[in-house]
Image (cartoon, rainbow, N blue to C red; front, side, top):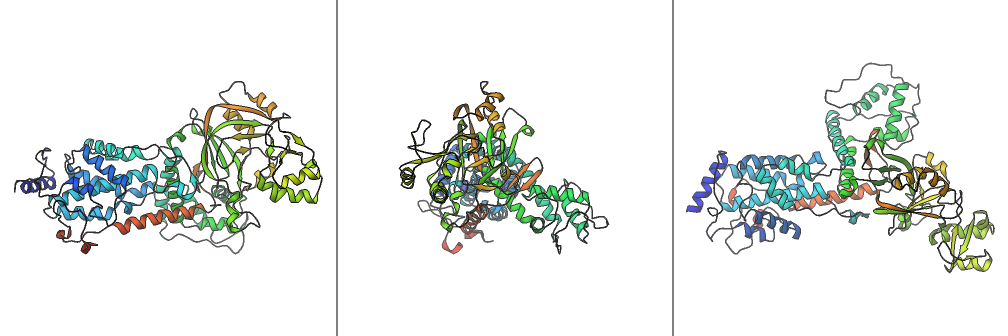
Length: 596
């Protein structure tokens, strides 16, 4: 009777928000009651019809051990405030690009209302308390690490260091600092924080344009053309360039002429959406303009998910290549962000012509991370077997002078001092059997240009110069066999070797004109990240890029499947509190089938 009386007194105090001091000894209930330990050790939580993961079970056990296996959320000075604050945080998950339903927000809110309208048993207290902790553990995990394992999607990135969320949650509850807990565990990367701001803006835009306008022109619009929709289009584009702190003014009457000021806005829009910035409103530009805002929101959320996968080391010096943007950024942790080195790049082909479907991905640049070890000035191009067989040998059969005209030589192996063999019929035949190798000598016409940057990896991918400079004038630059060609190799070399006095600008230029390879070791290994995201904030503002490899649908499908599985696992409560199963000591704590 004493235990029941204590519980009723405790809950009355909670509802009245009065201070209740019940020490650990007073909360030890008779053996006939379900304990926190039994709930933690049960195969599944009573609110769910699927088992917890081993990691979730271990984290919950650790959390409650820190609290002497007593109620966590009901033992605070202001339990109602703490629980309401936690539920509010779950409902705000979309501001972080997360799905609030993944944390059983509706389930917990309904149970919380039910508990406040009844006289709960200790079992009901304990189950609800435990469910709050489970959702917060999942929330922190998703916010910090991401919801999907990047390895399962072919993104070969190093994992973040493991954090002890149990200790962090315990401390936050004791110090009433849940908001700080969330802020401390979201990614600190500048691109992530920028996308978070952009996400909030696009959600407001989506609310403002409840019915998004649709624009259609009979033919491409050029400067000076006239259309009845020009005025509305300019108003629509202006909305994306305002802070939205105030109500967006309605469009003012104009003559609907495609003026130069409007052309500048279209050029900006085209650049920010990975399109050719020609100022002509053609099919591709119109398609980008008419893309639903909700779809752009989804792109931002996917970008934030991918940025959660990145380890904290990418907050310092790093060379970042974003494949869909065809762009490289070299960050120096000692410099303000506006001094970052940027340049255009050429990446692996999105789809090879005349290739079988199963081989289409061979030429795509992979997503991975490595450390830059050394540079090779005036390199040989060691021709891969696949390129040799598919591209060069067929040309050699048609033109016996092909090797001489392209400054190529036959060698015994790929090494600087390799034996060179005569380019006769016998040795050419040995190329077919892979007994001999083919390489291109250092020169301005070498396929790797005058410089390559080596960061050892399983894909044999590296950054390098190129003699095909004209390709950098293209908007869509997927022309390589997987490696990344850089527009300004000399500037990148100076960035990499900046702290090595022996490699000044003059020395770098001379090495790039050498007749034989020169290797420059890097004293400080710089992380190189070959990344993939179709939304990112740059100097122009928020930019969207074409999903050239089709990675977005795969990630979206994985996230949707995860949310669906979590939703199916939730057992929503009924209005009758007796439907919550009251188990005896020694039985497994799980719901009756009648409640499923």
